[in-house]
Image 1 (spheres, one colour):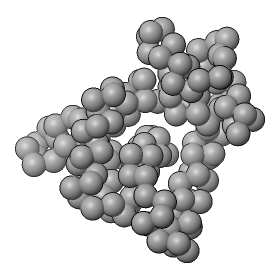
Image 2: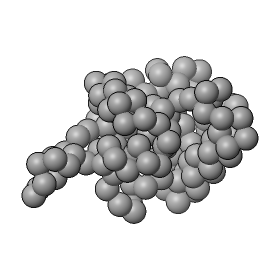
Image 3: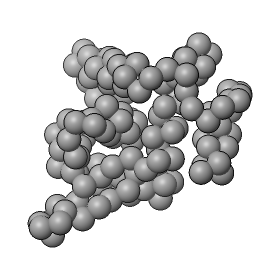
Length: 137
């Protein structure tokens, strides 16, 4: 909705958005996000996780990049991000409180919860990886 979009624009700060959708297609945005995630993994491989630990950002990147591929669970987010299970659980809760992700119970396995981006989370990441924001960095 429009309120979510305006909040996202406020979060980004100096970026002004005239229309509610980025001009690039989703494929280009996901390609930028995937590159950002792979760059982060390379950085961790060289310097270690202690210096560049941002579990919340890694979780958002994973959910964004894998949005159309497969559902993510806390376990898969833990495996892919390299963060500890307790850390992932804590950050998912924090991100969920900001309405960027949602938890959905598995239809047949009560032990499994799927984590997905909300529309607000999707729009925020679309904006972040759009040309308008990228050119400001």
